[in-house]
Length: 98
Image (cartoon, rainbow, N blue to C red):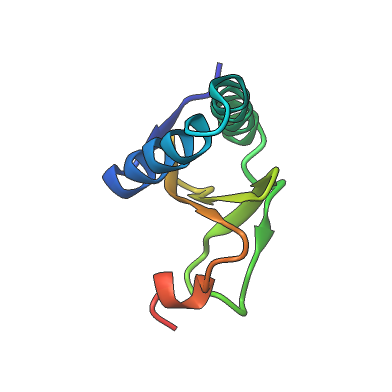
């Protein structure tokens, strides 16, 4: 089974997302966390299925959506490195130095 790791920022992102959703619905928070984990496992197996976002960063990062969230990761790293998990409506270029 392919593996993945989360940076400290990505861990903080996921904790914040889950905490925010949990305030309204603990069940939804569990579902979103499970879907994010499953997507990360899938990305570790097939790292190039995500999309490059040249409008966001010049780095070779890929983006994959789960609900309203974007998993941002480095496909060439072994294990796959999840850099951030952000809401898609955020000002993404700001997070990546643009």
